[in-house]
Image (tube, rainbow, N blue to C red; front, side):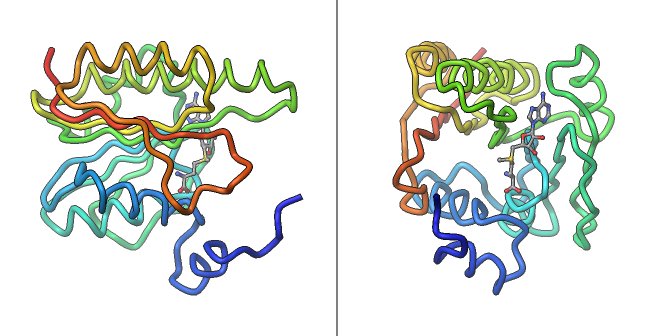
Length: 195
Ligand SMILES: C[S@@+](CC[C@H](N)C(=O)[O-])C[C@H]1O[C@@H](n2cnc3c(N)ncnc32)[C@H](O)[C@@H]1O
């Protein structure tokens, strides 16, 4: 069992973030600068909205954040954040996102399946969802755009990483310091999208 209220959980509560993983995005962005002022961001698997809060701070009032999740997300006070209730495996999702913003600078994905406890199945589902997030990114990113996705480490996650190498000029695997020690999750970063 995890300690119920770890350091990042408490910090998130104190600072008004909806999730402890808000700090993972901050740490990743400090290292890789994938999100910048004025950027348009798509946040895939966004509920309850912690990453979207951080992304909105990073892009500032000139930027925009579109968050998508299967779950309904309570709106944020920032006028530049829009939430869409939707499934990223749906064919129509790209057109739906394009209704809000045409040119995307960065796609971030903290997407995760509902875990079953069957490790191989959970890892495989995680990789399939992250591959789908990569497809969304490839359909939406401008040339030179950036991508970030979480995935549970497995053979399939390595396949995903190989796919990313085909379409980004820089790729890196990274575990932010706020990742729980026992977690098998890893974040894959792609910078410099080229079709
Ligand atoms: C770990 S949570 C994201 C937490 C979020 N980054 C935050 O900081 O608040 C993963 C999310 O992925 C969503 N998800 C899973 N499958 C999805 C799908 N096919 N389409 C959209 N969202 C999905 C889940 O509903 C869940 O809310």
